[in-house]
Amino acid sequence: MWQERLGQLVTTCHWIGAKGWAPATGGNMSVRQDAQWCWLSESGRDKGSLTGEDFLQVDIATNQAPSGRKPSAETGLHTLVYRLFPEANVVLHVHTVNATVLSRIEKSATLNISGYEMQKTLTGQQSHLDTVPIAIFDNDQDIDALAKRIEQYAQHNPLNYGFLLRGHGLTCWGKDVNEARRQLEGLEFLFECEMQRRLYQRD
Ligand SMILES: CSC[C@@H](O)[C@@H](O)C(=O)COP(=O)(O)O
Ligand SMILES: [Zn+2]
Image 1 (cartoon, rainbow, N blue to C red):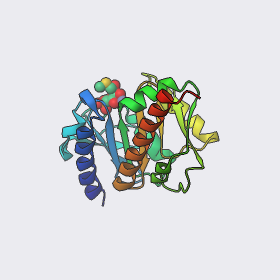
Image 2: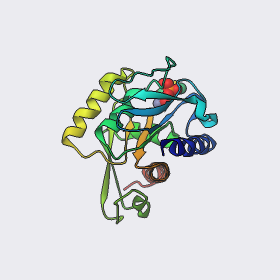
Image 3: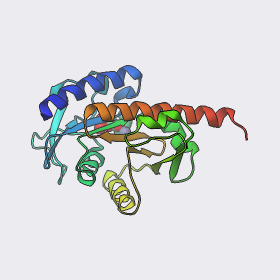
């Protein structure tokens, strides 16, 4: 099951690379194996040309990789998502221009998305009239501290689909590769729309 998921993830990484969403080794991706283990991209790789060999088994509770190789610098954010959301089986982190810039333009702690038909690409969303809040966390090189902040936020606020790291990128997830990929593409489309709207709409 998870082996098949990993194969689909590798294909999705190539798609992400072709989109230009993981430039210069930015971004990281993972799939869940089971309640204890996940498989994470190795740190420093070009994420657009990964193979199955470039994924390392990581303990979700401890962030340890038995292989001794170095998993992603942002391992702690992937394992946090797997701990917070038992239904999440895939995590995608990308450095798109829209996510990077919009998360800086929006000064508050939440990007509220409303008025777009494409909101319905996000599981459970049924109308452009609803508001989809996407949390924005200030970036931090201390991933443990960042993960702790996100965990505390999630205790009191809904955290659906993904979150933005200010000036850094988007981390999103899904129950399978198809859902994670659809929501990544949907969110990225919505970010692009929101960037354009803020650029052109003066009222
Ligand atoms: C290429 S600089 C960006 C990194 O610091 C990080 O944000 C990132 O997304 C990739 O780190 P990695 O350790 O390869 O998973
Ligand atoms: Zn990153």
